[in-house]
Structure formats: structure tokens, C-alpha cells
Length: 349
Length: 209
Image (cartoon, rainbow over all chains, first blue to last red):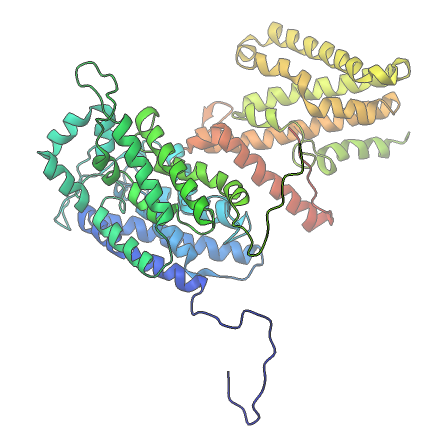
């Protein structure tokens, strides 16, 4: 308020106390919180990883700019939401996409265009999309280009290492060859856990380093942009199901109850990235706390269902997208009681 | 309703103003299921064009003899008759295609657009206008299927009419049902935009199945 000669009284409607928070600020904070994970991704997978991510971000921003111009809307490229979509999409892609023969560089661009134009802007823009844009972009790419999207490079700690060997992801090994083989591939169990925690494994660019992702998630929780309800119920239900149903008898190949390894399931695949950064998207998850727990449990259960029984080795993406459909329903049925409202007695017989 | 300009108007109505798929949004099921290739889309379009025209003519001829209470079953009989004719003709003259498309040809019986034109137009109008209405609706459906299947085959398989024409890796999703919904939705939006922008229409679209 500018001070003028005459002290003016301002008449406004409530709310009168406003916080500093805004959509722009939250979006850029989330972008910032993903910085450790993308740094680790770049460290493990080399400059290719950065190129893919930057390509996704640039094409997302351009898509947002042109579609908002074309639809004669206010251009809101600088609010960070398109940047975040591009960043998340890039983190969900394999670094092997940056390759000229076979030419696959157009794939991240197509993904960004689908994410921003079809999933977000055609449904009404930020706040109106039913599904998480980055995940729809990735689902579109995975179904369209199943081969190019599942070539995983092995991580190399030399930043400019030119060798681009391919390898299966831990979940791929677990699905195709079993838990014993996975432990053999990493030496022993302790080594397996520590490598998975650090992120030294084949996988998408930003999903591998659990510790860097948890660091970013901790920042978001400290700033109270996300709460524990959704991610923890997501991870806990997945871990429980992994422990109960994840075990397999090596000789007979039958399911062995209560012998699964929840740690491997929690640290591999995109479940940490999904639980903390993508399922918690404000637009596509329920806004009621109880509803978020239901949403998280649904995501966890569907993830483990796909991982253990489905055709794909990884199910976080489809689980979150399926639960996105249920978010409005959950919100509607789990509304908090209005203060001072007395529940009427049932009059129907 | 006797001058030629009115008949031309009826045909145009079926192609643009009340296009079965892009404007009225009826019979989206076959539009998604059959349009994964240009060849399939073309043949399905021809089959629907034939059935729609003949059903409209037949219903219009017998419209005075049908009691209103039994009109829907009667129309279904007429439609089933003409679908059987189409089905047997295709089985006789286009065996290869029939092996792929046979089931979908028989399903024409259940297409909402055919029954709705019989009920809404042919049962209330004389034979000549009914014929042109059926022709227009059939051409509209045919046109929509051609456009949809053109984009789906080009983007999904990189080929047209089964002949490979582009060398890039195609987007597999476009020949799956999901891609069909993408194609129908985007083209419907495009047609609404054209209608609003150039013809001053309302860009309306109903819902159907």
C-alpha cells in the first residue's frame, strides 16, 4: 500500500491476511526440489541425460506459449508449470533417447507436445487437467515407441564416458529372471541396497537416485507444499503388498507368501519420484487429507498389481493415471464436515 | 421439397452441418474400431453409405403401413435386411477383406446413425428427399471415416492403403483404440473450429455411442 497524504481506508472483501505463496512460487520451488535428482541423473548418465531433459523443457515451454497464443489465452509460460511438466517428463525418459541413429530425438518433443497441448491446455489449462500431463506424455510415448522407450543405458560415473552400454533395469531383471539374479548382478544384498539408494543403476534419468529424490521431497515437506499423507500411504501400501505377495519359490516358481523384498521394490523403478512429485500434483489428486490416503493406497496397490502380475515391469505411471480418474470421486465422497453443521438423521427407511 | 437445390442442401447437411461423426457424434464406436487403416475405413464407409441410403428409401416407401407402436422393430427388420444383403455381397465379391471386416459389417445393424435417420427423417418424408438424406448422411460418414483412417494409418503404421510411404518410426498408439479417440477428438475440435470461424455456427456437438 502506498502511503499518500491522506490516509485511505481500503474496503475489500475477505480474505484480508494474504500469504506470500502463489502458484508461480510453488511451481518454481518444486522445480528447485528436483535439482538434486536431475544432478545425480546427469552424473550417472552423462550429458545425454541433460540434453534430453533440456529438450523436454524447451519443447514444453514452446508448446505452452504457442497454444496459449493460438487459443488467445493469457500467456503464462513464466509460472513454471510448463517448465515443471517438461522437467518431470524428461526425468521419466531414458537417456538413450538422445541418439541420432536410430533417430529418436523427436520422441521427447512429441511427448512434451502431447503433455502440454492435449493433456493440459485442451482440457482448460493449469488447474483443469484431469490427468498428470507429464505422465500422459510418457504413457503416450511408451505405447507409441515401445522399443526406443525401453533401451536403458548403464550408469557410468565418468561424466564424459562415451561407452553407452545397455542393461535391464532392476525391475526388469526381477520380473524376467528373479530376485536371486538381481542380487547376483549387484554382488550382495547390502551392495544392492546401497547402489539402489544412491541411484547407480539403469533406469529413467531422474528416477534412479532415491536419496536425491528424498532430499528434494524433504524440502517440499519442510515448506509444507506437500504433506506426508499421500506419499507415505502410497509407499507403505506398495511395501506391504511387495512383502506379502512379492516372494517366489526358486524351485517351483510358485508364489511364496510373506517372503517378498519390499526394499528392492521401494528403491527401484519410479515409485519414489511418482509418490512424492507426481501423485501429489495439486490438480490431479484429492484435496481432502483422508482422500489423499485413499488415493495413495490405491496407487500403491495398482503399482504392485502391475509389477507382480501385469505385462509391464513397472506400473507407477499407469497406477497414478488410473487413480487420477478417481480423484474427483474421492473428493466428492470424502468431504470434510462443515463447521457447525449437524448431520441430519436418516429419514429414509 | 422438390427442387434440386433442396436435394443438394440435404446432401450438404449430411456432410457438414449434421455430419454423423464430427457434429452429431453418433456411431463413434465403428469410427474408432474400423478406422485403423484407410482400406478398412473406405470399405466400411461404402457399406454404411449403401445401407443408409437403401434403409431410408425403404422406410420412406413403407412409412404409411407401419403402426407407430411397432415402428422401431420394423425399422430394425429393414436395416437387418439391407445389412444382410451387404454382408453376403461382400462375402461373395471381396473375400479377403470380408475375412477381416465381416464382424463389423454385421454390426452395422446396431449403428445409431442409421436408425436415427430412419426415425427422424425417412419416416416423415417422401421417397426422393429420404434418398438424398440417406445419401448425404452416408457420404458424411464415409468422409469422416476416410479422414480419420487417413491420419491414423499414416501416423500409426507409416503407410497408406497398406503401402508403406514414410520411413520414420511410426507412433504405434495411433492404430490402437486410444489413438482412435485422439484422432476423433482432435478432428471434431477442428471441424467445430472451422464451423465457428468460417460459417458462424455454434460449434455444437452432442453425445452418442
